[in-house]
Length: 388
Length: 140
Image (tube, rainbow over all chains, first blue to last red; front, side):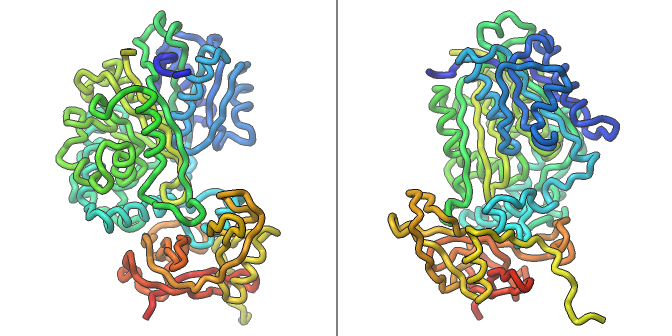
């Protein structure tokens, strides 16, 4: 059974907050659910499936959220694989809908990482209980350090430059300037990125995503139901997911989960790389974008630095990417996959205003979760406003 | 003033029945890898079963402790107790001559002199009476 065209995103809403010391995580989630359901023209009573990660929500957080909103879903999924989780949830929701397990799935996220002063990237790596942790945590890994080691190796092997990495941050900021909700909207230059302090070499502060509060939700339903709703459907054409880890000590660290998840998503969607009008790619760090684009097959391994250069990633360039400003400039409450989905939906519906990609019909969404240099997940979706 | 040094503040490994022999060998300043007696696959970190074939038949291979820096980062920010007082420090993957990569620190070398491909050798750091960590320093 193929999932192609079986389900669609019919509601998408990004919480405008970037700092919410007066709100709780569950409140942000509930407000996001309301926003996405309103956007779809549905009510909370229409929801019979729920996906959320449970991360930071307490022990068995999905149950707590069902209690909070008095939900009694017939399908639940709290796959928690880091920032890519919501991208994976979307595929899981489509599969559940296609299999008849439920009809309308709410996928929801909220976080108060900034107001709780949670050091996502530089607080050391969370955990400690897994076997692998015993051989890593004593040496002081951080999230940014994990990605920095990928950048260092990429620069060594392929001559990728700090300027090429900085280009990703500069374009993100240009897009943020066109997004009224983005947190950082003042223009920056390559020189500004290179002049910012080193957090973990070779990554500068402006190579790193921010920490914000935020939330969002999407609603997924059957293609059939989607036709009668308020907004144009955003169909799921193909999906893939994958994990990469230390591979018993044998890993090639520049081969990342996107290689596997991307290949599956393209095959299942029956779409070629040239047909992608917009790429929404998790930009935890500038290097994440470069390595992900290579592994998704948009360019050859080692060519990512050149590929992102020359303003190509602008919304009006050859290869529009992260048009909302990304985690580098719009928002990053810890698990950004949700916002990749929401911006893709806005673009495919023609709702992106000043940053609208012209004639945007097919979008690729790729979430990375975890740490690229130790263990991470990748989830890829190909979405379209039509089923060809 | 007490003779003992300040308490060791960095995270320590949790020793259990599965990994204790490996950590006890490190205390003796011996670094080991594992090899599956059935399929021959080597592995790091130690674990009870071979991830390739799920065999429990394991032999221990003594590593020469020599290798090269595969990649590294100089860490300038880490809020973790112990590390926040030790900035900057070098986090690295070393690829051992036996072919496996392990996460470690490069020590006895100014961070700005660390390079990918640099030959390194193991140095055993007895951080507590129970725990020794395998770190690496440049080969002179």
